[in-house]
Length: 199
Image (cartoon, rainbow, N blue to C red; front, side, top):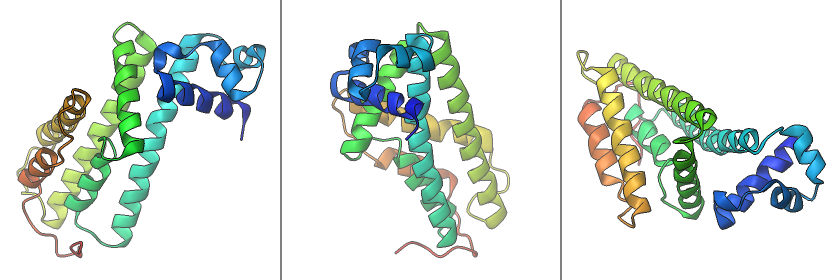
């Protein structure tokens, strides 16, 4: 493991255990078992350390989503099933995802006063939006989505529902996957002859 990744892993470990407020250069160095100087060698400020850690957190989720989509394509699953499984990775449906959701919400809270984190959050949200738009467009081509459906508006609605579930879960409500499934089903209401329904 590269030193930079080791340090980022230490940040996420500290943040998961004690929250982002507990992240200090000294504690990260101790957790990573490196010197403070080495942490400062790779990250010139706490802000850059937090941004890299936020990106790493999102990357891990993204990698899982990509793997699920790849598996779904190989199994010729309906796009509806793949997008549901992919977006479910953003929700606190098990211990790992619950920790990730709490951490992502903490990062978003910091982003309100941190332009670097705001930029990262906005950029990743736009990437996710385009991915959902693409899924809807692909759904049109195979018959799962009506040809005249507004992909941009529907993608925005689906993501808004997904984020809303995450926020509500932070308040101790849910999580309930049903609203997301309902939002997706309203868009993907057709059948694709090229897919094999999941059993």
